[in-house]
Image (cartoon, rainbow, N blue to C red; front, top):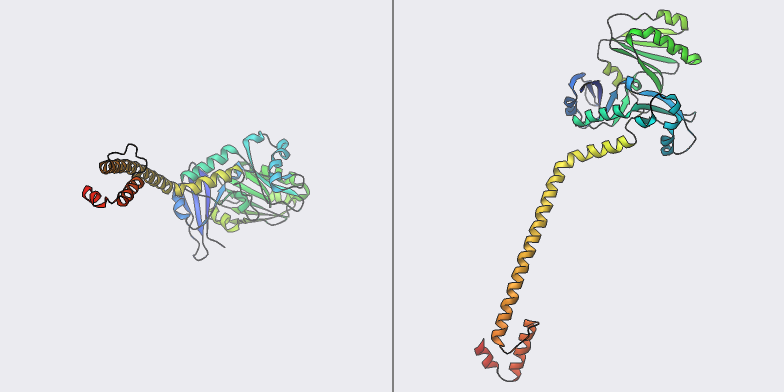
Length: 331
């Protein structure tokens, strides 16, 4: 298992993060501005958890076809189930299930852009952007309820669950049990991060499930990091978002180098142009000097085409006529 950095976005540019490494004991959860987590990311696989309130987990059934075609068809397969226009939503598909449907995570494009803007501003390149529900422990026939005074999370299946209002927990949980029908759990595991016990025994008796409760005083991110299974999670970084994000994050470290390379190339080209102009001027000056020397040696010549060749022809002619000594005197 590779070293991983888990980040949980908590809003307003703040976050909590936890490093999990193979060769080191567990680190403590840290809290603070998101840019402080960037110092921990080097050499780690970065997994970012986003709020379950902003991500809908559902399933889409589309005809058997390639994954690319399925991703294009999923928005229209779910259109009637969603209140918002599909053009304003982002759909991320998981691995196709045994029944032929695709687990799908749905978030607004506004949320996606806001999350990625925060991460980019903090110089963090995530490998995964996942619903925090996928990090709750789960087994078939069981539900897991994480309760904290700020809110609750319920994972009701491998690819299902939602956030609950802590003040209306009992009513919302009863509604979820009613909608589950024959799929209602035999066991509900409660992980309680508050100082008071939850009154859920009445629901357990009414709906006929076993209830277990564990009280914890550490940070919920410890539980999420320990139970996160990438194989079951749906990575929101898909489609246009993974392309634009990867380009931006891959380009950022090379931006300064590319700028310096551009200046170096510009300098080299300018130097080559200057040298070419200088050599051209010197060439013209040398040609003029050669012609001047040639006219001094052969003043009767009217037209000069190739001074060197014409000079050699003139020398040969003088030697044939026996005027070599006269020519030497002329030189």
